[in-house]
Structure formats: structure tokens, C-alpha cells
Length: 270
Image (cartoon, rainbow, N blue to C red; front, side, top):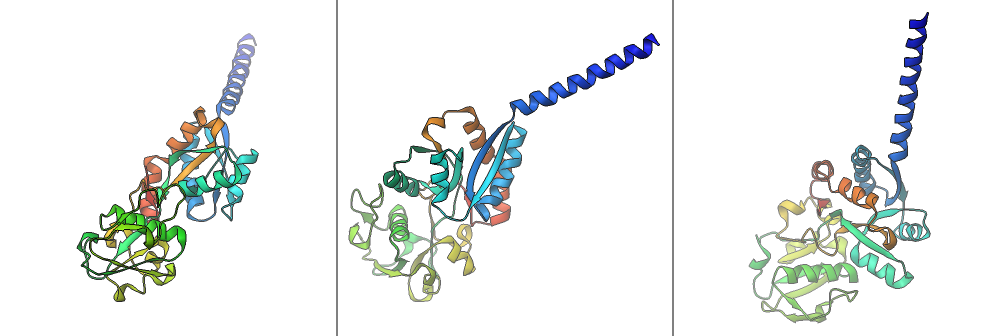
């Protein structure tokens, strides 16, 4: 009887310790509310969620269907972080709305690319060649920055960055006398037979059967200003959970998922 009593006591103690351990683990796990947009971004964050869980971070994903609400929700304290935008967009939002937010890490880029039917490199563009670019201000700016990065044109100082969109009028040096043709972004791939090259957004390139990492003769750098970022309130930027969140995103598991799932449509920027 005494032996049975001791056994029961030990069993009870073991259960109590198990409950305490579980409670301690739950207490150590921190929940972070992360805002993103539905579609590929949300798919990637589901992978991040699993990686973060291993390091005691519970990422609660909140999906939005526009680009305005995630920053407003972060500013209001309804989110702890968001991930859907690039630095120029964040800068414009901060300027317009006075948000106190900061980027804490790169995620991916859907790279703008230069494509051609005949050329192998942007440097092979002949004298007087026609180069088609998107005609909307933001993407035309990206296209001109890309052409400048490839060394085929130079822009005037102070344009193309810091919220000042470049236009063809801002080309300071054009040694090959390239003719910039402005077209609707959706028409650029179809225009390829009629121009020497075209600067095409990834979504339209893929729709035309072009693979950015294989077919582009010039591609945005993975750390371009147009790479997407993870954003938090400035007051939170040095908190331990922020480092865990960024590390979970910038993991081998996420890198491999992007490469396998999106095949060049989303290129890791880390």
C-alpha cells in the first residue's frame, strides 16, 4: 500500500512537471501579428510561419487586399509588422502620412528585366536602337534606373531616387543615341519584334513565356530599391522578436520554396 502511494505521488508529480513545462513553453512563445497581401506573399509567409515556430515565435498572418491598409494597421498598433512593399513606397507613405516606420530586412524582388529577340546583353544595343519602357511614372523610373545600371545611359544627378521619378528628359548621357519608346506596360512584350529591346515587368514577362533569370539580357539587382521589405514601427526595430522574424524569412527553407514555387517570378533578396 505504501509502495502504491509513492508510485501515485511520483506519477502526480510527473504530470505536474509536464504541465509546468508546457506552460513555460507557451509563456516563452511570442505572438507577432504580420500583415501582408493575399497571393504569393501570403504563401511565402506560411513557410516563414513554420520556420519561426521552431524558434518560439508564433506568426499570425493577417491578409489584406490593398496596399494602404497594412501600413495604417501597423501605425495603429493592430499589427506588429508588415511585408508587402518596397522602400520607395514606404518612403512615400511616411512622407504623406507621417508614419514612424522602418525597414528591418529584405524579402524578395520581382525583378524588372530588359528583354530582346536578338541581343545577348544590354551592352550590345546598337547605335540608334529603339528601347521600349513602361509609360507609367513609377515603372518608367525603374526602367531608366535599370538602363543606367547597365551602363547604357546616365541620368541627371538627383533624379530616379529620393521620390523624384526620372523621365527620358532626365537622360544626361546617351552615347548610343538610344530612342526611348514609351508604351503601356502590358504591351511591352508584344512590342519586342519591333524594338531592339524592351524593359518588362515580371508579371507581363512571365505571361509572354519569358523567364527573368533565363531570358533577360539585364536584370534588376536583388538589392534594388524595389526589393520588398519587412517593416516595423521605429520603436520596435531593436526588439528580439524582430531579429527572429527576419531570420525566419531569410532562411534556407524560404529561399528554396521561392526558387521551386515561383521559378524566377520572386527572387530572394537576402
